[in-house]
Image 1 (tube, rainbow, N blue to C red):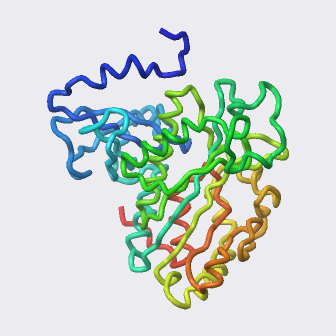
Image 2: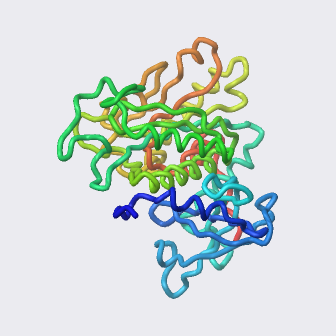
Image 3: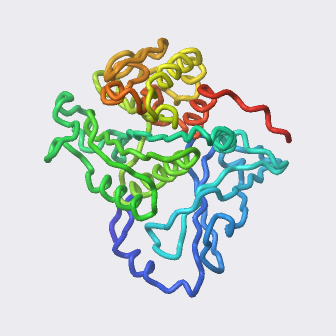
Length: 362
């Protein structure tokens, strides 16, 4: 057996994956921890679930994930979205969950619950979201995959959508992730190599309402899980390498029913005024470390100032040229960092455009 402690021995694992489960189903519960990361644990079920309603509530030790104190450590996980398992195959499933405290209130890191309330209250506007998830692949030494040890590759230019050795790195991980998402019904729309070598992007959407957050978070889980098999680390750090290298974002494309109809451009322009008025509020939830990325360089606006424009990738919000020409469509909020929570992003956009909800009664 190989000496490596970080690369999965898939060949040995395969013979066990083929074993008969004797009618049982494995359900891997996934949740977001107190550091905007992902955790999971697996439960054996007596039969495959047909929907999330067939899945039981479960719990975990919240003191080990910084979601609860040690003297009251139980945090409950409630299933909210279900996906076929691309590793163990049918009938096994992977489940996206919300976190809840023992008193029946959402855990302080459960941002999905409020976002779902906002989506439901504004369902008539038929929000469509599409998010562009950028990320960087690192080796075991935390240096970008394929970069010279302790050194740097050639300047940016040939890597974006590149082809060929020395221009792209770890395409096998990217393709494996793409196929796993498609198998599991995650609405992945495409992939491309990014401007910085070892940096990639995939797109999720269009999704309506809360579905976007569920699919984006699960796609992140899949990516990190696949990275285990190749011994590669995935970082969503918005500025993984200082200097003249592009950062990583989570560009957020937004459209409402009103924006997609004839005369929709006036609704897009009205949205710009509302987004400008709450620029600071948005930046607060648009990702940690975003100040290092949003410098006004490398296809970003400056973090302190809101701007928007047609086909301008140096603005806070971009309206595609085709949408401006047609007078309807969508806009792209380019401010979110790659590590931002999609529930918080989509939630605050809905809130900004159509108003906050009354505080939920406990």
